[in-house]
Image (cartoon, rainbow, N blue to C red):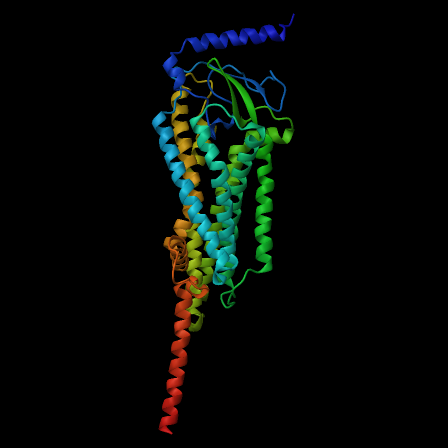
Length: 427
């Protein structure tokens, strides 16, 4: 007859304990449960899923719960954990200062309130939410084994992560399209202010990013693992999903993230910047001299957007590469898999650091690429660091570009008045 479930569970636990005792205690301490982003899927090694917070205890996983014991356990060195923590703290400080300053510049200066800059402000706000909420918890996940924050925070953190990345991806696509439209309609002089359709576009970007992040909140759960004689609650992508759509999402998640959250902005930028280059080459000979300065400013904005896309690609490539390698070459039935898993863990955490770096590096890139942002950053940071006796007026905060325009107008008035005086004196 069939073996009763309690007896079967006792047999499985006895096998698990016998496998655990075959390892040395020192190795056990150096082989924690796969943490962070790499640990979002079915755990590897002698691990049994006991229960999850949303489902019934003792539910059977879709894959065999017991795998061959590794010939050499996977490990993450403590030094790497502390280096990762220091890097994350640096990203936290630089990201808060940089993105807050960027938002203040665009909010305070009327000359900075235009279509491209409102998309850049959307980028900064999404990055700021990620830095304030998700980054500290990710650092804790690396240092600790257990998850103490409950189911709600377990679902909130990946939701904010995906929403922030979605805002970045869609904003970069919108910026690329906006730069092409600006060059294609080169004779149209853009005024100061945010058009209504641009505000609607930003709201639509946030709405789409939030909707696309909902499956992450549904898929993640607190899972109780029996791992090397320890019972741990881990926040991860649960192997058991209730609906057919969520099971499909679990299976194709890595490819979906790589295609939409990485390849889409690169393809969009490549297409529209190619069209923009062709447009500029075809209209170069027919442009009027009076619009040369105007086109130079638009080319500078286009160069800035292109740099943001390149930085995005460099920051997110290591993380997506580690996921694709894990999906394609990792074999969880191979006894020698833990050497590869150790490499993938290090690569994964390096990728997480690089992806987090993208949340703080955009203001730094704008400072070095755009002269207008550089002047505004300098005046804004000086205003914060010093309690000035001379208050910075809105005219000063607009930067040297506005000063050059005013100087040019004053020079023009002086020249015209001098011509009139010469004319009257000669007559």
